[in-house]
Image (cartoon, rainbow, N blue to C red; front, side, top):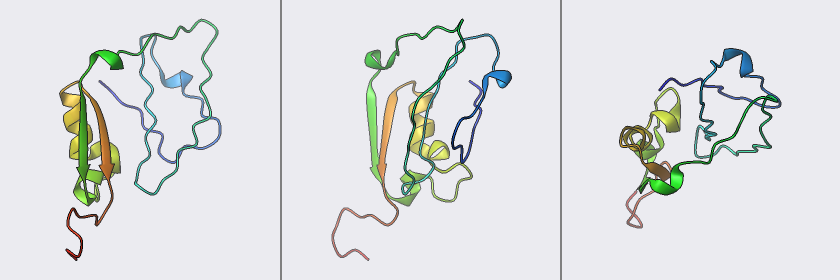
Length: 109
């Protein structure tokens, strides 16, 4: 599956000119743990149709961790972190609960 990344996208972003006449999936991702998502909607062309998501038929994997789980030092952060890549390869729903420097034991640092 190919991806189009719109890093730092804000306001209205017209992506229709770069899309082929096929089925597409939109995924909105915060690139880093401190980013806020303010997704306000999606406008489709008049001949477009929306399909029901297949997410209910897939298992969920939850990844909990620190900066490695966040994808620290990777170019696209979260979507190049191992949890994202593993979840996509296994065709599962996946979530990352991760913060840089977090530990499971108090006083570790």
